[in-house]
Image 1 (tube, rainbow, N blue to C red):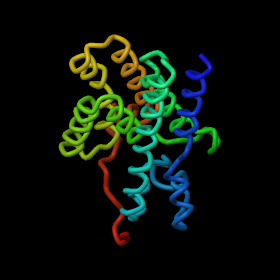
Image 2 (cartoon, one colour; image 1 turned 90 degrees about the horizontal axis):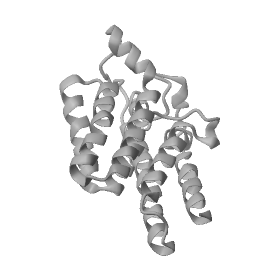
Image 3 (spheres, rainbow, N blue to C red; image 1 turned 45 degrees about the horizontal axis):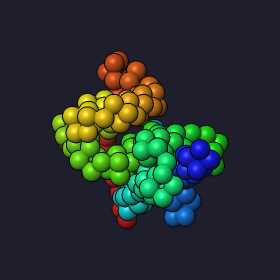
Length: 205
């Protein structure tokens, strides 16, 4: 019991590392919470024109999802913990990203971290969700809509790929978190005010 609680807590703390804010400080860039959408994530960092930093942000946010789930998988095997622990750790790392204790509980929308944890939980599940996001974004150029579609089908993919009720329930929880974090985007989508993604010109690297 103690090992399970500690694993979930560590997963939350891993999620609380906001790479958008950390890397922006390292590279002398403005705080991503102060421009564009105000969201500390890779898509907003890309609006600064610093593609390399945006790429590092995306990688860091995804890898923390991978790290939390792999840690839980190791703990499950090493200590004989419940087999649903990796899914709980996945939800915890996502909660940490959305409400990070290290950054005043003002975090990102969780898309990259969700992708990382999905890939670590089940490679095919992660790839299916990533393909859904990429297809939706290619067609619409609207990042929020793409994320919502990918999150919405995650429980369906989980059931089709694994047929595990616990895993499907966990993916439903992930979808709820993503939808909640995108509630303002949903309002703009419904009103037709959500803009397509356009990177800022004139800056590179």
